[in-house]
Length: 154
Image 1 (spheres, helix red, strand yellow):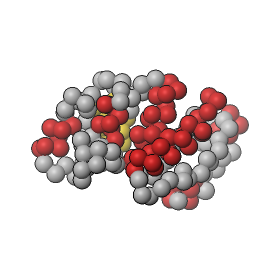
Image 2 (cartoon, one colour):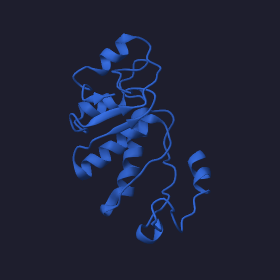
Image 3 (cartoon, one colour):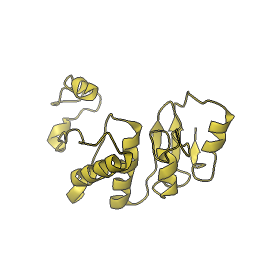
Image 4 (cartoon, helix red, strand yellow):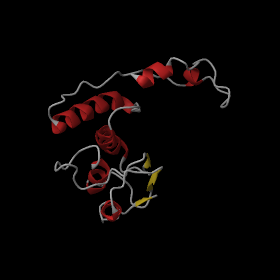
């Protein structure tokens, strides 16, 4: 909701800093919110993946703005299915490379570890930017340096 509210302040006709009229060169559509179940993370991830594939069908490109961190995993799966492994610049205060978070293997705090395990990200070309916490103890940093996620540099 916040992204849509802020977007209303954009002037689509002309971008001063870039000296372009973006919507004369690009066709853009708001594909809406993804309807997902709140009761099963695995089902929700599948629903997000299906929606992302529908949006990206036919050579179109999807862009997700907002939402829980977990949406990155199905978005990465969709991009990789179309284009192969990708480099990632992860802007966040948190690492999101834990092996588990309150026991489940796939949560908003584990998604980039899962992405590395699934070979979605290009080794040596992904980076964290802005990590400021919470890092609960040294174990969080050690876990980020495990073989599955050691390609992240911060």
